[in-house]
Amino acid sequence: MTTIFTIAQNWLEQDPDLETKAELTQLIDNAKAGDENALKELTARFDGRLQFGTAGLRGRLQAGSMGMNRVLVAQAAGGLADYIKQYDHNAPSIVIGYDGRKNSDIFARDTAEIMSGAGIKAYLLPRKLPTPVLAYAINYFDATAGVMVTASHNPPEDNGYKVYLGKENGGGQIVSPADKDIAALIDKVAAGNIQNLPRSQDYVVLDDQVVDAYIEKTASITQEPRTDINYVYTAMHGVGYEVLSKTLQKAGLSQPHLVKEQVYPDGTFPTVSFPNPEEKGALDLAVKLAKEQNAEFIIANDPDADRLAVAIPDAKGNWKSLHGNVLGCLLGWHLAKKYHAAGKQGVLACSLVSSPALAEIAKKYGLQSEETLTGFKYIGKVKGLLFGFEEAIGYLVDPDKVRDKDGISAAVAFLDLVLYLKKQGKTILDYMNEFNREFGAYVSGQISIRVSDLTEISKLMNALRNNPPSEIGGFKVAQFIDHLKTERNNDILVFTLENGSRLITRPSGTEPKIKFYLDAKGKDALDADNVLAQFDESVRALLRREQYGKQDC
Image 1 (cartoon, rainbow, N blue to C red):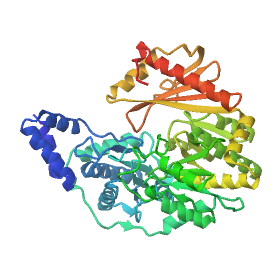
Image 2: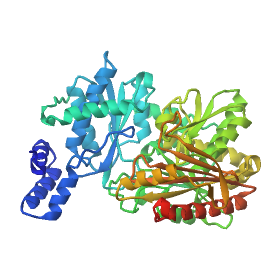
Image 3: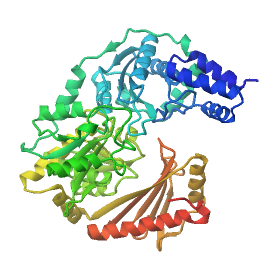
């Protein structure tokens, strides 16, 4: 009988990392000495494997098959190498990038060595760089695949492994069934010993040619006459600043005031409790600097710079972050007008949990619109795409360049919008008011329930699926859609109320959460906020009901 000690010892003997090796050795020794907590922890570390899915891998940095570590990454690289060789029989190749998190560079080099050892042409980006640069490099080199070592805006203790496919797949993130096929090959590698995987130093460490090409292409987005802009930027301890700054310089745009404490990569994220610009308090230092500099607005990237957040002062001078749906619609409106003026046809796309207002923008300017499943792995595959966004502050403004969300190009597009408004003597707040008059006042909210036991997610989803509410907050549910029963075949529930409000619920793809997306519309901004506040209260009351598990929300 294989014991937990045998499994752990086998893992330990493969581990090339001194830190996780010492960590696991201590756990084994303590467990063998009768420490029940150590035995429980050891068992949890090997209770299955960190699952590889369409988002790749993402988890806590720790020893064992349930954590991100060099053994697990080597197994993933070995399985992915086998998949790439099956996918491309001619001249398989891969580009590998990494951010500033702990071990990102080590995981990237391990991957490059294993890919090269497997006979795959491997290119390693020259240093810590944004995820969109990696996404761009895949098509730039016409590579078979790409890997970005990042956990995006997850807590400091996490890291991740994001996989892309090039060639006919277009350079976007993987979708099913590729994830399942890769996972099966990873399992085969994991059944052996990573020390038997051939490794080679014969990979190419790239120079700045691809970075410069990305910067030049991104700088060309802005078309409006240049004028001074007074704004603040934070990189959130991530990798965005260098590339953004060089892009601004190339475009002839004003440089921002920098939140110096957060401008350079630091995987410990010392000034924020959670390195996500959407989180409460994450922009506190940026707001402080904006007030000191009397700035017009704040822009922020997340740590791997594939997302963009914007904050502006209201009429009373109180700073507020724009919801991802608001910024997505403002950018979409700006770009739709440009495409319409140029006579260009195509599609404006967003995830189905994002604002329905984008479809109204498309309709007004004679463009098509499309809603996809959640994630840019789907948005990036829309044919004829002109612009795409998701409510979680992800935007794609130049799909001819990359097929993933891009916080650098989105920042440049936003600055182009600011210049467009300045030319008319207007502010972002003016533009938002114009939007409300043109399309109606759309507002969005979100409720997230974090769980410690993942079975709680399926329990709540099944309760809502099998016993759907007939009304929420006194308004009848006019339409209920269970996307497990549609061609989307996805664990998403949609409730549309008779007053036009919409509730969508789905499990998070990257965190132990279940998410509830609320969309409402009012006659004006104040009315819309009131409708949303009542809707939010009603949904929380619904979730506290006995049949839905008395959720803490």
